[in-house]
Length: 154
Image 1: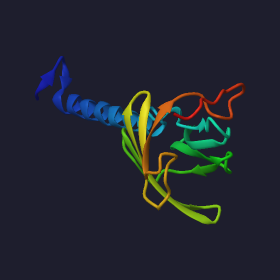
Image 2: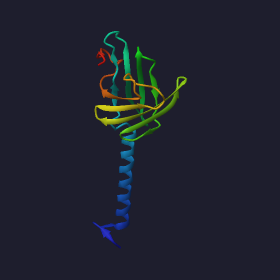
Image 3: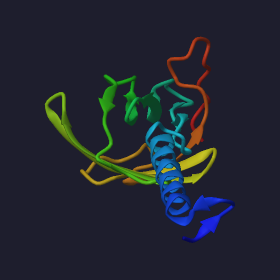
Image 4: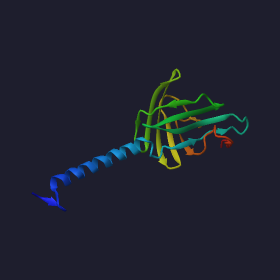
């Protein structure tokens, strides 16, 4: 009988297999718990310098037991009603959203560019404050945070 350190080789092989499976399960569980760059809030909401109207988009990633939910906050003159969305497909750097919520369909993707920056691409005809279907959002406190100040649009 083949032995490794006095342990039968079949037992060593089974132990290695079990440890490998536990490692893979743990890695999947960590990824699903939101241990990716999709944490916190990313925003480009700003105030129009002449009118003070709020414009832009904000995404807040909220940890859940199965990954995360996304709180979408849009501003078109004023803050619109926020939408809580569940991602349909995710990877460590990309999220796809396709959902009918509050009587309207919404579809967009989010790609993480760095720890502090992501790009949102609307696929349902919505446009950003820049008049295009995509824009870059930067990490910062949520617009509804206590004492959060809004910068003027550039």
